[in-house]
Image (cartoon, rainbow, N blue to C red; front, side):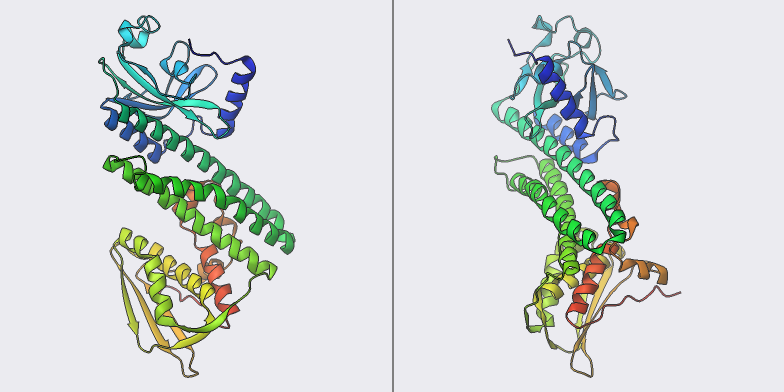
Length: 402
């Protein structure tokens, strides 16, 4: 007989669920996709990501139960599934005395088969279940059970990572507002938070990479799509955090340059290679014209990052299936000049003035989703300008033609 939570354990579990800050939130397309993969892999018409509250089951993801967002916890299958770390499986509910009289068995959705893998937080608390359901008796094979457990672990990881990101961004926003009167506090906080955010995001990106490379064995194609989505979102956030760290070092005067003679052709080629995936995703092609091939004396790392930020901005705000053009010329004084252009809507003079200010409040969204949706105009360009100026150059934006 499975163990029963003590009052103290159940209280701690509910507190961990509340801290996850996900109950009664809008649909999450990535978690919906995980539930769809679970249903497809296990061959069932229904799959749910079910979070177990005090008296109810609330469905964060729902495949196959149209119009149902929650149900009572009493006598539910999921309430049994959270008592162990492995998959809980009922091959024929009608023949099981624990469930034979359940209204979910005798009536809609007429459950016969159920399998659920617990959602286990990093704290060890089991707060819900990724389950698959069918109206016929059946059983999972070994690979299906292992995949269900992997998907449950991935769903849990995603929810915890997004909670951490929301909290960190909210703290960063509050701290930035307070730091308006203290330059030192601002720089200290940015540098500290950048380091603190790196570890969990690298873990998320690494886990997604393991799934993409099929460390656990061959996986369905849609599974790769979900892992790619997670890796892309994590990489976007990590890029933003790297900018925060660089900005903090600039503010503190801790950035040290290694000046050398650098071929601008090589720097641009490297930056385009780093941004190749983003360009491919939007169907954008590069057009590069080297009127001259100047060599400049500069710090390779900071100018390379400045190029990535500027070209990345053009890719984000240019037109789908459009062109990003780059021109390299030599000025009369022998220095190099790089021009980057895109075919997007462009920016007004007022937007340009704000674009180089990394502390614009609008650039720090209260939620991860809104932050990614705005694609960040201020932070990357602000860091890029400071890097260029640190190397004795200038970075400017031209307004959209009227």
